[in-house]
Length: 393
Picture 1 (spheres, helix red, strand yellow):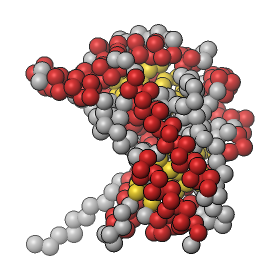
Picture 2 (cartoon, one colour; picture 1 turned 90 degrees about the vertical axis):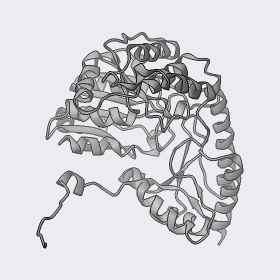
Picture 3 (cartoon, one colour; picture 1 turned 90 degrees about the horizontal axis):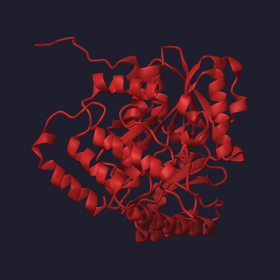
């Protein structure tokens, strides 16, 4: 029987740009099909396993039948207390686990749901460019208008708050910031965070700080929490993830902490949309947050060595770049005369190395490419040699 029935995506889906890493994966598969041994320095997914004591905690918790039922939407109180205890040890600030923290199915989920809780159609949201694509996409899904804040090298990849027009600031409901920063690897100091607090308070803007890389830092550098800044607790919520800190990307567990009204608003969205994180994973996360943090220090040492190795290769290849103090990313200027897409295609086709084009993180990312340090030193050595050879031919 013939039918004229058609299926059409909603406008919000049709207007989405192609997902960056899906496009990269397609090109990667095509090159691999030719028999090329591809080294993937694209996605920031840790290659090291989750520490054994965390895995063992999950195994034990999974046998407890009490964990097989629906979990709390906002998370077990014991997990939220572990999160606030960790936060107090790490940053010296106390929060109420009952009202000022909410569990997340990975911080991406919480970030994506924040505009649904606080942004009305037509409201503006300040979004870093380049930045994590979810900030702008979640804003659009909620009917908000993303206003891009360019992150430029001459400003240390910090947004120029003075450059935001007053009429835009007056219509802005929410601002996303992210330090240590993906994709640039930049860090923010106390003075910048204080300026954000003053700007946001003056214009009645909610600040959402994505702190997913707060523990991936080197050379004695200890990233700040935005909530350490005077006045931040009145206007801000901060997103933390166990994904990068403990090599738990596939586990999908994190938390948001901060102003209780902001936490409650996010909790209202979660109550209606998801059913919370599997309690056995929350129990394993308690172990991760509560145990000795030597495993984190060891991982940072590994990433530092990888950073130094790859910076040396790139310098030898003719690039000029500084060693980032945090994250496991390198943000590199394109070779002269090449756009970001051309650079990523060249390295994939000529070297069998996947790098991420900077414009995939926003228009202001054009002129750069990103390398992720989430492969072994052996593979980085091979990738470095291939990159140097590709630039010679």
